[in-house]
Image 1 (cartoon, rainbow, N blue to C red):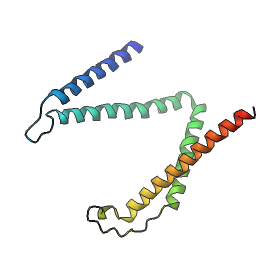
Image 2 (image 1 turned 90 degrees about the horizontal axis):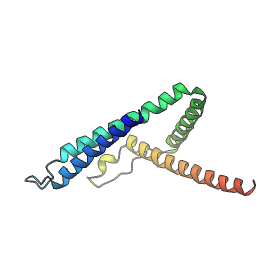
Image 3 (image 1 turned 90 degrees about the vertical axis):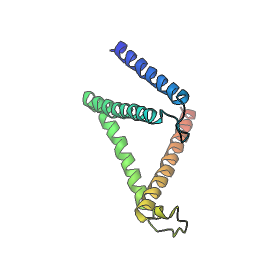
Image 4 (image 1 turned 180 degrees about the vertical axis):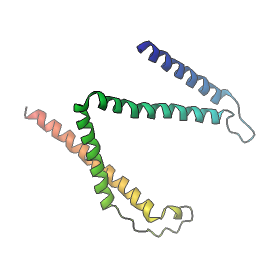
Length: 143
């Protein structure tokens, strides 16, 4: 299995290297864009799809084979959902009254509520990360 995986990874790397060379050395069309841009972007989509697929499949497989550790993983997901729900509750959907015609499309209550939720989530998660780092270092001192 390890040899097959190694071969697949080498093939993916070779295709990526070949497409990168085509992208940079393939010339430009009339508008000045590289000729192989679409192929390069499609390959990036393929690689992203493969990565997302494995990112979803392997944790599910791990949960099935080791249900005891699945509880810990699900607890983390539930904690993240609670943080996002609290951040959503604290975010505002008040319209800003933007006058700039390029930005007025973003002055929508649902968009503002979502943006506020994301910003508040980042604040809370950053604070939790800092507190956990401090706790770890202080706990080391007293051991």
